[in-house]
Length: 323
Image (tube, rainbow, N blue to C red):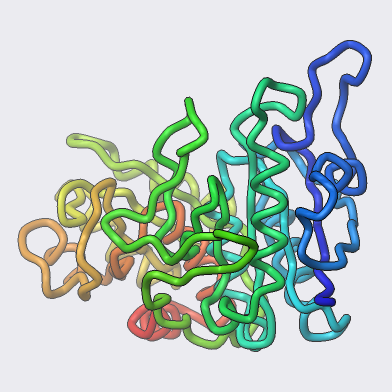
């Protein structure tokens, strides 16, 4: 039988509001909520101390990514399931994917969550956990990279986004394809996984700022976060990744100081270099800004954290070009 490691971080999937059972269930207790026979693998549960899901720190994200990679490469597990809060699940999933390396080829790493409390009527947690264990034990996900499993759907970490905080269908890969589903105790793939990210050369940098741009914003907001210690900045632009013209000089200055500035968009965009775009995006590229290659702003921040481990601005630029 396949062996799967469960890394349990608490949050909604483990939270009970009943006075008699209030508090956070351990990983072992979560496994007890799954009906007998629904688990398709031997599961070893480990609890990981973590912040609430809406406030998961980069340090905790990196810890989970390293534990998952180690479980597959060094501890002999066939797969890993991470239970996580919904709010920042996509960031942790993508950061874990960027750092998975050879583990993505030798096993499956699956993140899951719940939108309903453990003791709510028709709680989605037990089913999501059972489906995630099934997915983590299935060789069909080898080479697929890190996935998110919710509502029996499998989403690639690169494509998944939380789109609804009110129901169990909280995540979507659109406009990308759904990677697959869990049905009948097995994984059914329905799309080709995204390409694997570039190899990681060094330790990620955790101090990366994400700033939402708006017309007329003061460029001192960028220098303020650098003065506070940020080693890189992601700007959330509009449209095709346009940023206010008043930021161009500061982008040029920051790049000269060795602070990479990555420009993403609040909209879905094509995976093309920033310099190939027109208007504000193209001008920002001329000032030294780096394109996010179609990533959402929060994922661009995770990518920049990893890219900074490769070196300075030009090393980051090269890494993003291969992302």
